[in-house]
Image: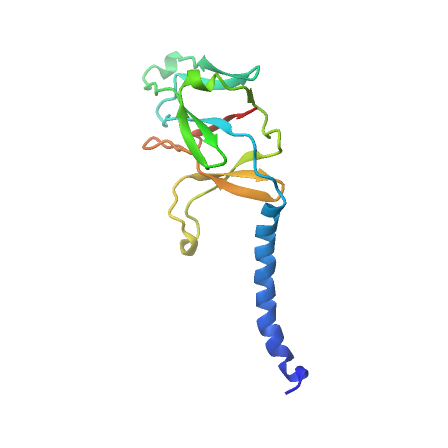
Length: 175
């Protein structure tokens, strides 16, 4: 048989294979050209519920983590006050978070900007679930480390039974 008779067969098999290779390359290649992140970060997880908020909030001022009281108004008197948010240090090398006390977190020099010194940022993704055939079993939002076209899912802690979608709060990059 000559090539003209087999051309539809080659195109029919070759085109899907080529498309798979292009998709694989577009996902895999950016990871090869981006250096590993060098700066870990600190975040908080608010246990708050729809019925009451935390008694404090955390902020970065002058490169240090500080705690501020949340004023309680008369209209909120019947609402319960939840415990302070839990602080975590996220180690990007191991993709694990370690709980920190406020005193330990205050020992770090932090940069509160959205991007680390090496150009990475923490961005929210989507909730778990979605189209039934692609359900991933997750229930909360996912967070990603992003730099240009490079993205990597990061495993952050989420608040248990009082989980709300806004419980994760990025505080700062460790300098």
